[in-house]
Amino acid sequence: MHKQTFVFLGLCAFLLMISWAGDSASAQESNPDVPVTEVDSVSVDSLNLSDIVPALPAPIPEPPRQLKAKDVPNDGGGAIQLTWEKSQDDGEGRNLVHKYIILRSTSASGSYEEIGEVSAGTTEYTDHNVENQKSYFYKVQAVGATDEIRSRLATPVEGMAKPQWFNSLLLNILLGVIIFSGLVLWYTAQAQRRELFVRRIPGLSAVGEAIGRATEMGRPVLYVPGIGVISNIQTLASLAIMGEVAKITAEYDTKLIVPCRDPIVMTAADETVREGYLDAGRLDAYSPENVRFLTEEQFAYVAGVNGIMLREHPAANLYLGEFYAESLILAETGFSAGAIQVAGTAMVAQIPFFIAACDYTLIGEELFAASAYLSRDPRLIASLKSSDIGKAIFVVLMLLGVLMSTMNVEWYRALFAVN
Image 1 (spheres, rainbow, N blue to C red):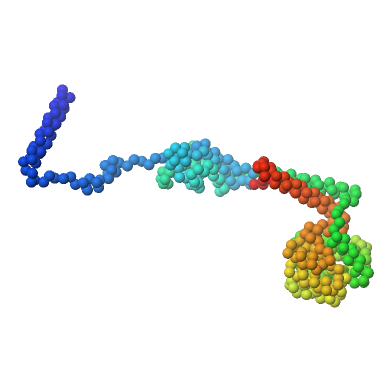
Image 2 (cartoon, rainbow, N blue to C red; image 1 turned 90 degrees about the vertical axis):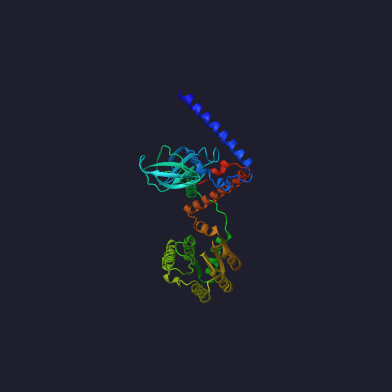
């Protein structure tokens, strides 16, 4: 009954509309001067669709997947590494992800704070602000065009930082130390049984000749240990050589003069010379006045050494240690005095001056090998031979490395990685 009533009413309304349209058209034809009312197009155009249809919500990106938290290996602790798979909307799909934010809490159900963010396409993050042996819980959210557009949160994952007592990345260094230590021990045992061959170094062979010449001429030997401090490796090498020189001068009964720039070096030099005379059985010939402290000023020290050369006329000048701008002044003065001169330093910039003005020059490592060469101590000889073998091994490994890199063999380079 109701359905028929609605149909009837609708039909009536339709007929009335047709009738009204016909009346309007006839009225217009009968009265052409009457203007027809136009629809205001401006008001229609000014309407915004959002005023009529409500705005749709912004699309939310999918969350990252397979979130994992683990301790950073081979470290002292204090770091947790997070890894995950990219969101389905990161670079593919709807391509909505602009970045990822990392959230952390000390309990799974506690409040989470933002600790960092990474750009889209990144799948890992390392948290360095953690305590060892303490659990932390992490979540990662994908963020859209604005910070308010975030993916849903997945189940948190737990991570704990722990220190490792052994760093496997440094295993190659441990292997190198074991090999070198084994070489030292083996050569030490060999040096105690027999005399090992050490290649001849002309500058060191000339030291004995220079001292012999000074003995024949009845003039002293001048030994300059450089201007370095006691902690300098070149100064320590010079002191070791000084002990052997003192022993030879004591045996030849030749005066040895040692001017020093540093007071601590002077104390060490005095004891070194004294032990040299003691080893030679000539402690009675030792004179503390021959080991002298001049001054700590660089060029004032050079002036003092030059004064010794001109007053006492040493027949042999030995410059062994660390030298700087004073090297040429010393060498030129000794050359003009007619002394035989032997120099040695690891300062690359000063070697040319010594080569130009001295009779013999120890270059670089020859300075550090001099004490072993002169003393023939089994421990020093073993160290010298081991370092030579070690350098030969390194040269072979570098040549192999060049060949492997040319052939693009990555595993060989990975053998020597330390980080």
